[in-house]
Structures are given as C-alpha cells and as structure tokens.
Amino acid sequence: METVTLVGAGIVNLITALELVRHGYEVTVCDRAPDPRSDADWTAYGCTRGGGDGRMFTLTEADSYHNRSWNPDGTSNRLLERPVSDHGWLVAKPGSLTGPELRWAADFHRIPPGLAEIYNDDIFEVNRTAGDRWRELVSDEPRLFSDDTGYADGILRLYTESEYFQWHLRRNNRVGATRRVLSPGEIAQDYPALSAACADGTIAGGIEVVGFTVNIHRFVARLVDSLETAGVRFRWRTEITAIRWASGVVDGLDTAGGETVQSHGYVLSPGAYGDELLKGTQSHHRIQGMLGVWFTVPNVEPQLARSLKIARKGHRAEETNVTLAKDADGRPVLVCGSGYGWTGLNPGNIDSTELDVLFDSLEDTLRRFFPEAHAAARAAGTLDASRQLCVRPWTASCLGVFERIATADGGSLIVTGGHNTGGFAQSPVVAEAVVAAFQRRPHMMHERYDPRRYEGSASLRMT
Ligand SMILES: Cc1cc2nc3c(=O)[nH]c(=O)nc-3n(C[C@H](O)[C@H](O)[C@H](O)COP(=O)(O)OP(=O)(O)OC[C@H]3O[C@@H](n4cnc5c(N)ncnc54)[C@H](O)[C@@H]3O)c2cc1C
Image (cartoon, rainbow, N blue to C red):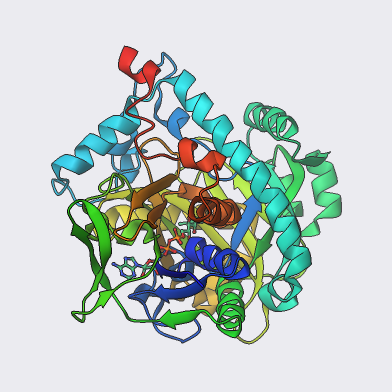
C-alpha cells in the first residue's frame, strides 16, 4: 500500500484524505493546529475551523474577483492598495508590505478582462464538476450530510439593486443554478423572516439556486471521526517547517520537532498559513491571505428557513453568506460571514481599525436584513462575543493552485490551495485531481490550476 503524507487539515486536505483512503492509500495528516474536535480557541486554527460555523456550495462559488478592481473605463481602481475604509480591500498594516506582496497586488490589478473571463469559466467548470461529486458524496457518506452537521439543501440569493439582480440572474441561468426567481412580495410571503427587509425596499429580488450549506465545524469533526475509523492517522500540533530537497527533488518533510517525515507521496495544502513551507515550489509567494469576518445571531421567530447569499453592490460587506445553524445548546442561530481584507503573505498582518470597518459593515447588513435578530444579539451582549475572522487562501489570478513536483523515489509532492471563496465548494474536485496525479492520469485541474499559467498567458504578455 502506498503511503501519503498530507500537510494541513483544512477542508481541502480532509476531503483529499477521504478520496485517497477510498482509493487504498495509507494516509497520515499533519497539522500544526490542535484537533478540530477539541475546544481550543478558534484563533488556533486555519481558515476552515477558525471562522464561523457555516460554509456553502453554489455553482458560482470562488469566481474571479477581478471585475471589482476595474474602473468603468477599464483602468485599475487599485483595489488592493486602498484600505477597507476607502472602499478597497487592504487590511494589512500601513507600510508593512514586502516586494513579493506588492508584485502579487500588481499581478491582480493587471489581469485583462478577457483573461479574467476565461479563468472564470474554468472556475465554474470546476464548480459544476464539484456539484456532481458532492451529490455522490451525499449519497455515499450520509453521516456527513445530516441534521448533526447542519446539512441544508438550497440557497436563496438576495439582491438590493435591480440591475445587479438581473446580471446575477443571467449568470445563474447560464450555469444552470436557477430554481426559482422571486419578487420582493413573493420573498416576504415565502420567507416571513425577511418581510421587514422586503417592506422597506431593502430587497430588490431573489433567486432560489442549487446549493447547500453545512455547519463546517461539525462537518469537519464528523469527517475526522470517519477518516480515523477508515485508518487515517492524524498528527495534531505537528508543524512541518520545510520540504527537504536532495539535488532538486523532494526527499521528505522536516518537522519542527527535528524529525524527517518520508512517504511515497505528499500533499501540501496549508491554506494562507504556510508560505514558508512552500519555499522552493512554484506556489511560494503565490497564495496570500484575504480575511473575512463573522457574526452569529439568534434565528428569532419567524425563523429563517433557508441559508442566504446577500449581495449589496458597492457596500463594504458586498457579499454576506448566512448559514442556518445551531449553537452549542442546540438553539437555532444564523452564522453570517462577509468581507474582503487582503493581508499579504502574513495572515496575522491586520490593521485593527480596518478590521473594525469590516465588522461594522457586516453589522450594518444584519441590521438591515434581520433587525430583530440583530437587536436581540445586541441586547443579550452576544453579538460582539460572536466576532470571529478567518483568512482565505487567495491567488492573484483567482485560480486555485495545483502543482506537482517529483520526489526522490519516483513519487509526487502536490501543492493545492488558493481557492479564494470556494475552498469548501471545490474540495471534492481537488481530491479527484490529487488521486489522478498519483495514478498518473490527466485531470483538467492539473493544467488549469498550474501556478505558472497566469504568467505564461499570451494575452497578459500583450498588455
Ligand atoms: C467569510 C468567509 C466565508 C466563506 N464562505 C465559504 C463558502 O461558503 N464556501 C466555500 O467553499 N468557501 C468559503 N470560504 C472559503 C473557505 O473557508 C476556504 O477556502 C477554506 O476554508 C480553505 O481551506 P484550506 O483547507 O485551503 O485551508 P485552511 O482551512 O486554512 O487549512 C490549512 C491548514 O494547514 C495548517 N498548516 C499551515 N501551515 C502548516 C505547517 N507548516 N505545518 C502544519 N500545518 C500547517 C493550518 O494549521 C490549517 O489547519 C469562506 C471564507 C470566509 C473568510
């Protein structure tokens, strides 16, 4: 049986571990964080376990975000150089960014619209494939998709602006996501929890789309249980400090404890938290941090009955995901996450003033859409206590990363990551691509998410 060592136990590598074990590999997973089933403080964890307890799959997750950085005349609005308080995405401390970080921002800003569209289509094809794989997983692994993990089918998308609503409707129709289009009156009737936001004109329209949500912390706990039962070995609080290289090929991994880990294959998926580890690979410096913020409020009567994606064009909390969930005592809550704050390579490089602006923006959305839930959380003092953040792994091209490197004994080291807003959504396809690489079969992700793809692009060279 071939042995594989995985570094990182975020959602991307956990689903990869599941796929590897199903294909007969002997899997060990190392993570510097504590066991996600323990009640360690949320700040000890990466993006998956560190943020709020909700994630969703939709067919348009992880899309290209380059259009946010263009002025109407096609020039760049320098999105990453302007702080959040100036309607940009910069959250890193002033003057702290290094050369590789500034180059990454420049790469993000100069992607031409035509190229961004091509990348976006590729991302949506990954999502479409992921939808098929998730359907198979729901049927093969029912324990992962139950009341206990908060599995909830279907997403309601809401829009505050008619033109943007129509644009999104065309996009959702194009990818086959639309189930039903709703006017504000229909939303108020079918979703009484939103009647106030419909009555005061906040909501311009909605679309029920293909997708689902889970309570990701519970989902991950259940997944780790299942993986252990299937024979996967977990090594928590085990930091991998470097790839060991011998004459240009991989010869193992070094741990912070001075040990060398060796196996036939390796999969590094350290999220936004592992740039040092990626030294010597093409992925080094390419995956940077984009934080998002979270609040949890009670799901007051009349309860919201479907998870939401709220779009407020031009607002700082431009997109807010609202996931149906239960708190530790089993009471219904809404887990709300939103915002984009670029940290550069260090996910801890966060200006607290800019961070507060993101929390204020998310709170503004809650006040507008869920006035009673917001007031209840404020009155109970639970709103501020529920403040959390996590840092998504992001790339300048907005494409994920899939890199393969030869190892000394003829195997492969694979780097995956950088799936921006869709690490959960895309994880089954990443897993499929990893198994294909180990079995020396082609997979669309091998070329499309090649970290050198962007710099090799002909249209970029022409600009
Ligand atoms: C507000 C918000 C909402 C989101 N909503 C969605 C959504 O609805 N759907 C969706 O698909 N995505 C969503 N995302 C994005 C998603 O959460 C991320 O894409 C995903 O969690 C990233 O998972 P990962 O496995 O790549 O990284 P992580 O979860 O960060 O895991 C990486 C792991 O690697 C470990 N690690 C790093 N370096 C080392 C090392 N040297 N040695 C050992 N261990 C190491 C870390 O401790 C960490 O546990 C959202 C993100 C935010 C911020």
